[in-house]
Length: 286
Image (tube, one colour):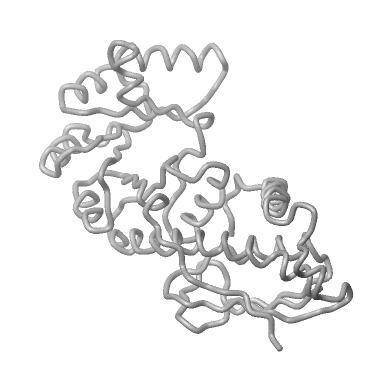
């Protein structure tokens, strides 16, 4: 299931742009070699190990090019896959299948890599009361695909952009003059605009944390690049008054240690910027 923020129109716009980039005035190879009425069956072959993502998107791509296409899914989004397995079979107009091939593979390989890494992060902290969040460190124009893959992999989506969450970070604080100034201005801005947005404030040390606790009126405190012992102390100091989040330098190898400090959330840009694509291919069946 895709996140509720992703609409059919968003998917359609992506498909149109992706096909325009790849096809322009025509797939001349297919037009030259394949009869217009030819129909074929193709199989999506997995050549790696991980978590599959992008199957629903692939079906949208195929149906955009050929509304009559028939697709049999053997491995749905979120399924564990092994080398040599068939994720799905698709039957339709041969030219349409070949035109869809690269867009389907590029999207699914990227999404499956992110879903696989996300599933490993989720597994590392699965027995702890903490949630792993993604970030805005995504590929421009395909953020929705990458966040979709994070969701499939078992982690959670944080803010989708600058528009749906107020996050006061070090640059905002320094430009505003202090944490107090930044928070109070954010609160006044939301009141003036009639907005109801969550507020996260980044703190860099315990002095800033104490100032923030005195100001209040926020949703979450983000501890940026805190060492583990100091993070333990900071979480204890907050004592449940606000949500807490660890951020900065979170990897698959240290996420559990950060989670064990008692924070409610751990955010990791690595979910999207460090994921390796899964290898797969689309083969027309003879």
